[in-house]
Length: 188
Image: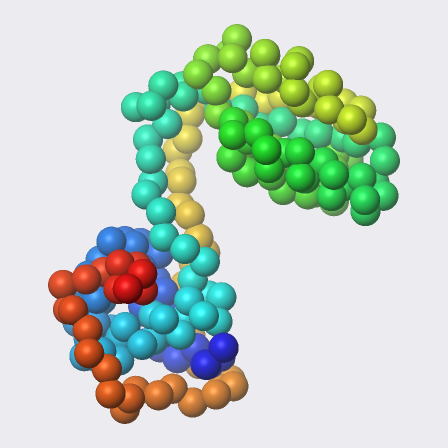
């Protein structure tokens, strides 16, 4: 991990990439007010430091035939750490489950599940979810519509800098293809 501090430029890069992960490095650098080589170094450093976990497309579920989204609240019989991990491992093997969050409170997990239709969800519910070891009860809530879908977190570009851990190395020699996106350039 080469750099830990987040300055205004880093926050701007993170915000812009979060909004458009396909933005070219040249456009990203222009928006951040720096040249392309240091911008790409910053992106790589943000990736290495774990601020950027990956790049992906926001796919339209309806266009692919997944017209139903259900949030299932799941209660387990046992909350022993080994049992929680076994449930999480099982959930990771189910493609219809798109998100799994452990909760504090009445239920142990909430799952975001996509299905082609209600019958498809019911098949999943009865053959996979309620049949799974340690599942005591499931409460399903059918999503009627999504009025907001904003992945990531709010990033305030103008907030005070996070204390410095290591210095940036913007004066390194670096050669890049300016037409590449940060994600593509990282795969070279």
